[in-house]
Amino acid sequence: MTVVFSPEAAMLRSQPVKTVLPWAVILALLGAIIVSSPMATSVWTKNAFHDSDDIMRIQQVRDLLAGQSWFDMTVRRLDPPGVFTHWSRIVDAPLALLIKGFEIVVDAGQAERLTRIVFPLVMQGALYTLMGLSGRLLSGASAIWPAVLIGFLGAPMFSQFQPGRVDHHAPQIVLLMAAFFTMAAAFNPARARLAGLSGVAIALSLGISLENLPFIAVLLGAPFLAFVRQGVATRRLLLWTAAGLGAGLILVYAATVAPSRWTVGVCDALSIAQFLPFMGLAASAAMLAALAPRLPTGFARFAAVAVCGGLTLAGYVGAYPECLGDPLVATDPLVRQVWLSNVSEAFTIWRLAGRDVGEAATLFAATALGLGGAIACVLTQSDRARARWLLLATLILVGLALGSWQIRAFSSVLPLAGLGAVGGALALARRGARRHALAGGPFALLIMLTAASPLGWTIATASSQPAVANGEPRVDKVACFAAENLQSLAALPAGLALSHIDAGPFIIGRTPHAVLGAPYHRNNHGNRAAIEMWRAPDHEARKDLAQLGVRYVFYCPGAADAKAMAPYAGDSLLARFEAGRLPNWLREIESDRSAYRAFEIVAPATK
Image (cartoon, rainbow, N blue to C red; front, side):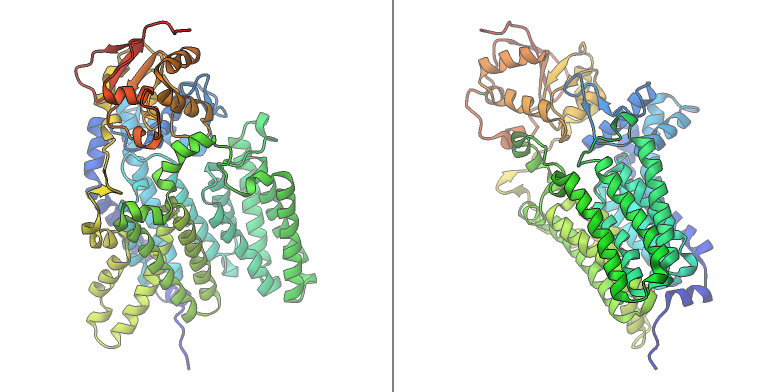
């Protein structure tokens, strides 16, 4: 007789989640606090921002607290009169609440810094909790500690969860984990209502951004595939999915999209272009649940699902064909060439390997090992357990493919891959325990999990990280973003500035000035203008800057614009700055302590 391990049977025999999981999460958070304390100290003492999106997010929250409309996502000091961003208030709201809450006991600046330290910890706590719950669901109660542990071995490596990170990536990772756990748990008919929570998590994720879209497609496909195979038994799963997704999406849409934009379709954020097809999927799930008794065969159910899916897809393709490809297709070609193609998180895994083979190996190997563990569990489990592992393996496979195309996807899939690694490691430990107690003990399990984690691979590949990339020395851009180097600029009267694209958010967030360029794909006009100004010959740059109303030029020698903007003429504005041949229509503003050289335009434009 073949004995198949059943996680649910194990949970019935032993349910320590009420005591084990909280302790596991608390210890993981304590470890994370220790590991990340230098960065937390930097945030608290130096008000450091380590990423442009974080300071722009905080600036967006500041504007909201200062009275800007909830539905108005315009960054007014970016290419004035401003750029309407694709971001969402779903992340702004908890940040604003934390800031206002901390202001009860500390001043506004300290409240903002506390928020930037506490928010990532809250996200980590949610991630560890979901890792523990998912591990228990997949592999039984014995998987709680390993699942939380591998989350810890990976989460501090994710820049998305470090102190100071308040962008949307950490919430998106947490929502993806929540959607997976609740959908996988809902495969049990007695817990089908959890599919409603999965639908709500998916709706919130769509409301924040569309980066989880491929994973969402897999998650929402699961109830329909289950229906094809099992028929009437999945009616409650379909109904709860429909209810959660439909109600959640309506509420999210109404709460985040201005009524004046309800009929405006865009490809890079939640709009009518995404609202209608997902509502169509919710309606299809409800209709199939109602028709289930009349569809007795697998072929009939497959045909019904195919018709519903085909009609939804046809409507989407017919109404918004431009959204089928690259969601950033509207990016100006010059801006794409100079800026977007050089954004590191959009690199392919192969391009990253050419720059840093150790980092590429870490991301790819940790994900691939997790996929291998999940596939092994698919092959050794049966029925409901196999379906859950199959869902996880599919999500990891999609993440591996996406990460190979754009490495930013690895931060989303690595926690899921960690669950696969836990399943594989526990299976090996159980097999090893039959030969020797040490082979199946905690120490052996720790070694296996470390070897499969991002931290383990980072340590293993540390010696392979090059001092130079493609023959070029690494450029340290931190000086261009540091608060102390922007203080002298902040003391100047407010004005529109030409500066470096990556520095734009830091100038907006730390000074009263407006800028032309910033690293956001909707800022086509401002980014193209900034690139053209740096590339233009001296006399043309002066004339064009005057037409744009630019008052200042802020130049930081540590910025990476030069290589990204090549080729440019020897008489271009950027070339003159690099060579020290400054135009006579610029007056340098003396500064005692700054990485920037600040100039004010003083001479009239030549005709």
